[in-house]
Length: 205
Ligand code: NI
Image 1 (cartoon, rainbow, N blue to C red):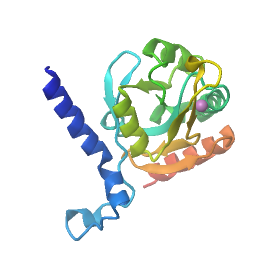
Image 2 (image 1 turned 135 degrees about the horizontal axis):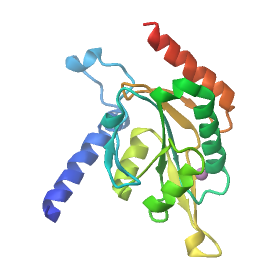
Image 3 (image 1 turned 90 degrees about the vertical axis):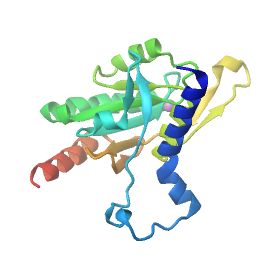
Image 4 (image 1 turned 90 degrees about the horizontal axis):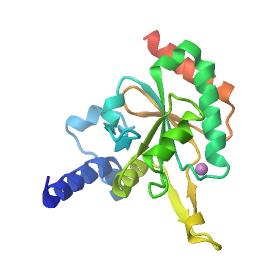
């Protein structure tokens, strides 16, 4: 694939991924048309790679509930704490965990190699899907989920930079739309209860 074609595809994808937010940012009114019946909550889109270099998009996860978390493996405290909570939630869900996929998306692809991410997430729970990709694609995913990150340079060693980042967990439905966010520090048992409640409501419909 030549560079021109690739950059065209990347450009098209970025436009596609950025679309829901562009509407919000521009304050554009959605006028009468096919969109009028669409729910206000947009479908959250991403296209990234897993630790085995497979390209995965939000479309691959339609039909599953997702627990999506943005972070980085060098994180000193927030990420390990949250991933521990995620692992407790997955254990706590028991059989109900079958319909739930935990996803960890790095905001630090320079240091988070696929090998390093694989090792890191498996220390918490083998079911956690670790995703990375080119910075532009990560940025598109961050934007799509209304998440945030910012590199914080180190005063001592350049390689020891840290990342400020969104610490909540996005709970996404099988239609790819956000259900709610679990705040940093929320108890695993509370999250399990909320996920179960959602699964139960969906079953009885
Ligand atoms: Ni972190």
